Image: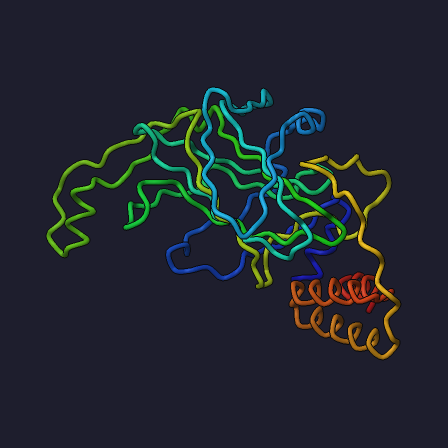
Length: 299
């Protein structure tokens, strides 16, 4: 299965076919839809957006209001959020919640883009399902994204938006009286549930963590083919570049190469990535080639 996914390099992106194992509460979570179903957005329009950098681990709240960015492309309507996340820290687990605000819900759609703003994964509004209020949270639409940026990238991008179709529908919530009765063990009353209209603005909560398991959706191509678009500048560039590490001893280099090959054979791509990054940090000149050859079945 891993080799089948890796053979899709001709499309410039690599999509795994399964998410990591999830808690029971997310057992009905949908897989990300093929990017062919995502809206077609011009590269120039994406470059013109102001991409807000987020560095995990972090929790933040974004208010999408009248002064927020918009993107007049396809069926996209209303305010959008444009986020940039580091691609060189391992796998990312991102939980996105859209809170009930003024009795309305913003239905998020998420397009994940690689370092060159090429679509790599697509999560439609149906991926973000209704969650009942809890002790620390209210009515919301919520979903979790598990992403593994492929080697050689510095950033990946999340474009969050809603669509004309989303605005034409509603979400059925749970009546608070029903939720309370169920919570205390009483008989659940037979009363109607409220419907939340969908809005072009809203309030988003984002929780981002570095995640250490494999099986995520992989973002970006392993090997760049031909000319690639210019990278997008987000925030201030680093003022200095770290000095290269001294060459690694042959025995140490061989140890890392063996460990990388072993991790790939076991299907643990995340472990192989971490080993490669650590080996290069220590001065290995062979770790990257070992990783690439291993995942292509030539190592």
